[in-house]
Image (cartoon, rainbow, N blue to C red; front, side):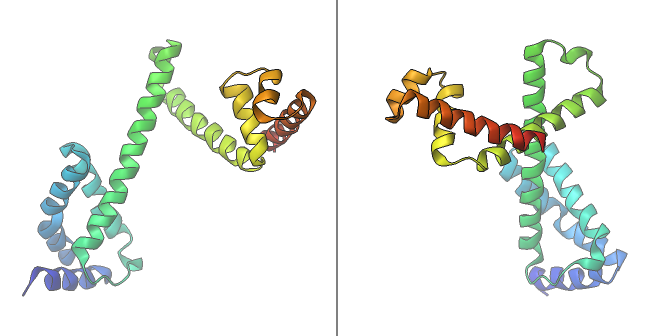
Length: 184
């Protein structure tokens, strides 16, 4: 029997709660998936961790799994998504460590404080992204010129072919929207 069919049959038995089918599928696909994960992320520990999470998840959710024709391809896709989430989480932690290191106080932070800082940074980014979506293109453009490029109202007016008063009012209206979104 070919591997694709064997994996499919094990998957179907797994869906009904057959532990032996789960362990057989694990034995058949664990190392190929870890090797695939290493090719994706170039880190054996992360690939192994993600593969373990994939198998843990499929066992926990075996009752709600759908039929799959190509089990290995399905699990590779699942593994790739899991790896991307793990790598993103590690990137966020590294960014937070770097940013906290710039403050110099991260060494004194407890683990709980550190996690809260990472999560609050993410919340602020999410809120800012949603708030910026409420602005018009022109408002976004002028906010960028004022706060990211540090231009004066005179320079903004000149660059955007507007009067100084129009530039000021546009930025003022944009800031009102942003304040309202952050306070909502």
